Image (cartoon, rainbow, N blue to C red; front, top):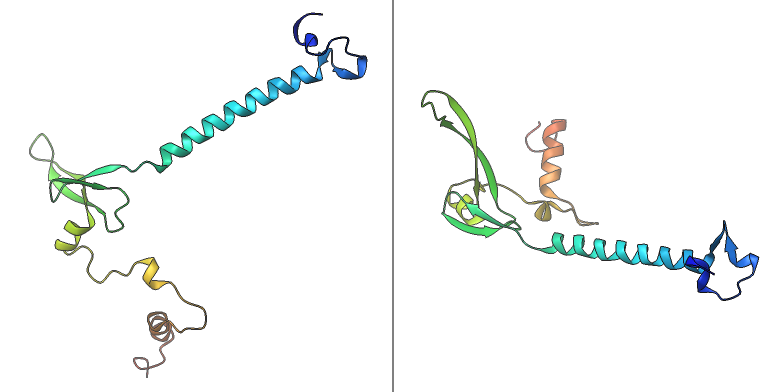
Length: 137
């Protein structure tokens, strides 16, 4: 016996499929599955790592998970000194709030509607759209 058929000494015809030992084939599949699991775990760990961003306004690093972070586009002069181009600036939530970028904003968490409770903001929006209620006459 040679190769993969050596896994089972004196194997009978039902033990082999397409000329290969079933145990050998299963061992290869297990090794492939273990490799895929290792790769998936490595990818998952990469996703859990936090990323640091640079706050262009405050000149400091901050977490990419900052829920108030803002990216704004501003017009700046290009290298030729004449043409205006847009450039992206990133700010942490604290600096964005100081700059007035977070005023009157409601996060999705605060807008979440609880079952059995009326959401006054949503009701006011609907009344305004339909022209009824306090402002609709």
